[in-house]
Image (cartoon, rainbow, N blue to C red; front, side, top):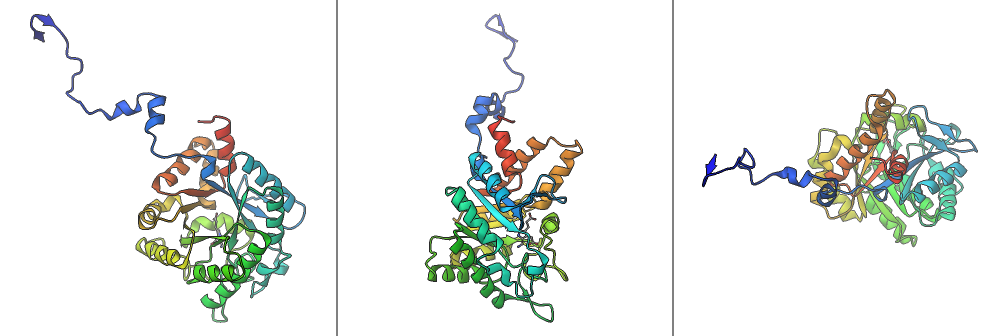
Length: 341
Ligand code: PBG
């Protein structure tokens, strides 16, 4: 082209004043415009424990271990030192202590209260979260009490859950997390805790917990699968989203401090909906099946494990989760500390 006798080639062939790629042109710019943060401080580390002095690798969850109390204290301490603020603990209860009334769940000398005390003594700054549900203690393997005709009893179960939560609070739990999906349990737990002077103990409610096949490896780890039937009369139908908002409104009104969506990866739309529906903090649980899919593909050499871990967690954060429960917590924190990509 000729302009005033000077020969200039046009600087660019397209007339494009708006070029989003300018905001991706260097690592520095990408750092500045990044919308979502992901640090070990966003993660909660679920840990399994068992009676006795052994630490047993879990076959159905490679990389996870059923810890002794001593092993648990050590593992939690290492995670905490890497910047992970909280753990949630799940017990494997010996068969001989499982009963139809699940009474072991409020035994003050039980495995969980002993573990809480040991954790809080060794790591006072570590937040200890406990699971409130009957399945590890119930010979029927359900989260609630089972009637003779097979129904899961709501109100009777809530009474036992209150005793369980009180047992955890007395032992020093910072947060109780009801995962049972019974109706009205958040209000009942709040009232029971407050009456006993535990108004400082938080409730992290499993608000939208779906009846999911992604829990399979977890049930293998704890030997906690239901002996008969399934969990569809209390856990939510994977087809439903509006119902999650309904559960969230109830939990908020009943006094929950934080809400949870579970599983996480296949339910990102639910996280986003709840984020819009409530000002409460939202947790999401990247469950055992999600973990195992990544672990097994990486073990086969089909995926870059560290990159997939980061991307899967980032997706959950981007959807609106403030915090994520993940079996990858310590591994992620180790990678982050080592400057991994
Ligand atoms: C049970 C409970 C389950 C999980 C956490 N608490 C299993 C279930 O509801 O059957 C699953 C966690 C996972 O799969 O990682 N109260």
